[in-house]
Length: 459
Image 1: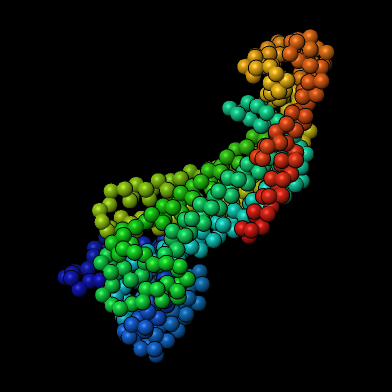
Image 2: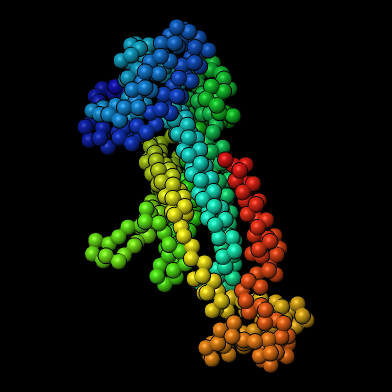
């Protein structure tokens, strides 16, 4: 069954049928299609196009289709062009010729837009839940080791000491911004397109605001031509998903390194790792590597739709059918990656002595010393040079920060005071970083409390 055909003397070729068909992937929109068609049946009744009794027959038929569609084999053997023609065919089997009225004043262009928006609204809600679950797991992990000290890195070189919770809060902030972006993408999708027709608006007196209320859309679209050619809302969703994956990939990279034998900062649970088919000793971070790998698939989905849309003339073009698979792919990979990352975070065991030793054995205290000299009256440029010379001397002699005494510091440069030796302990230097957003213990404790409060407001 086709929704068109009167203009044609012959039907499409078999190759074109196979090439243009989309039922094998857009069947994921079946429940959105039913939901939107139910609302349109009500709109037809309000406009006097169908009677109340006919509307009720249509609604009953859609309810039956919805129940049947839960069967995993419901689409087996179907040869329909797409999910929309599939649903119309099923409607005809249940409501007879009345099914032919369901498309009165409705174009497939606006129907596709509606179905996609309904799908993305549900998908965004799932991503928002996934983000809050991961953010909660990160805060729980921070709470398990509130006093652990680790080196912070720039250029993958030890830079300054930070608290473990401060490090995790950095990712909390990334995922918090992701939450905002997904919410914004949801808001842009959450606008009713029905009533736009194919591109010029509907010729029937539908109450668009009433349809929007039925489908819980807070607003209606403003321009019918824009609706027909618009996939900005889909790109917004893909972009927000891509940034979620970018942040998940960075977290994965960190933890792959930190759980390696070279670092040994943490252990990952057996449930999120795997072994080698040849090497009995291996415990591989496959869960994190897969997240890192799946990031490319989501980035590819964004790029795919960007390229598809970049040169299209107004308004609808069949190219836009190619939006569905990238959207489905990005959503499913992002949601599964969020779930996987949450389980990984719940499995992590930190070994605090390892990163603490890495901080103590390196010169992450250098900036603390330079700033202390500046606070005591030394120009910072001079302070930077003095501490740099101290580090150089230590590297040459193989001397660790903790091996310097106060008297030795004072002998090395007159600007040093013996009491400054306390800053050779990374924990002491962190205490000076008490500004909001810093890694001082008091600042981190406040930030954790604030993060928990913010998360509670999101759940």
